[in-house]
Image (cartoon, rainbow, N blue to C red; front, side, top):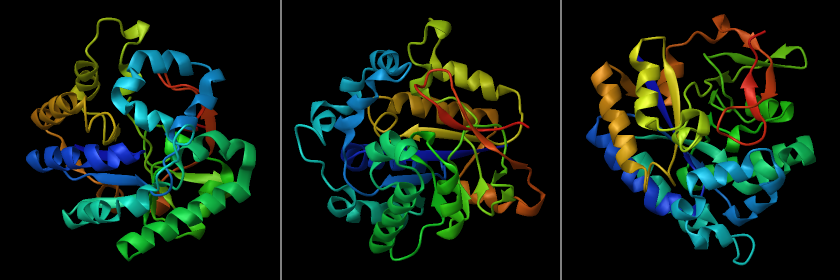
Amino acid sequence: MRIALKIDVDTLMGTRHGVPVLMQLCQKYRAQATFLFSLGPDHTGRAIKRVFRPGFLSKVSRTSVLEHYGLRTLMYGTLLPGPDIGKRCAEALREVARQGFEVGVHCYDHAAWQDDLLRKGAPFARQQMQRACERFRDIFGFAPRIHGAAGWQMIDAAFQAEDELGFAVASDTRGRAPFRPRVGGSALRCIQLPTTLPTLDELMGREDEAGQDPVAYLLRQTAVPSGDHVYTLHAELEGRKLAPWFERLLAGWREQGYEFVSLGEMAAGLDAASLPVREVVSGHVPGRSGFLAVESQG
């Protein structure tokens, strides 16, 4: 039984302060993990444009965004210029790889990807992904092989760009099991490892989960073996105020008998030719606002 730990790093603050904490926790529990980095400007403050998305205000109030992200981060891209994460934190990013963790691409501009992808379409997707790949290569000295889209936002052109840019493994979607995407009637090469478990911020403070401990809820979901899982966490949350919750998860999953692996390690045991080929559709996930890229079961 395996759980792939997928760590999304969205902000300058998460890169500087959350990533070191998560590395220490993973090392303590002998856990491999994949760190996916935002490599361009931190424009977190521009998320205010999502205020009209269904569920956005509810999520903000449930998860105490100001408490977790801090006022300064929430002003980047609006009242304050957005700092360039890749340029400011290149050495910190390289340290993650030196410590033996798998590294990959989350995005170039996190806020732009989430807010503009559907509106601007294929040219924008390819430009953002190309810029992220170039920055990744500048920092690490090799081409990225792992991709995980910001906010689980994807379009057909972005899936096609993963093949064109040489990605071997991606975790851009929500779903149940590994698959290969179908776009325009053709099966793509890049393996999708969808996030299979809810995230802590999706469980926090939900009315339908009233009074439930999110950590205990997750441990109940994995108590009965049902195959491998992909769990997504965020450097800004589990790497800071939710670090004790994440440590409880690691201890609980270890007690349940799970091995912690990277996305690449999970994909290495798969025969891509035998994986199901599925469409990716837009769908809702409880506790998260807006539409996400979801594995079709058809």
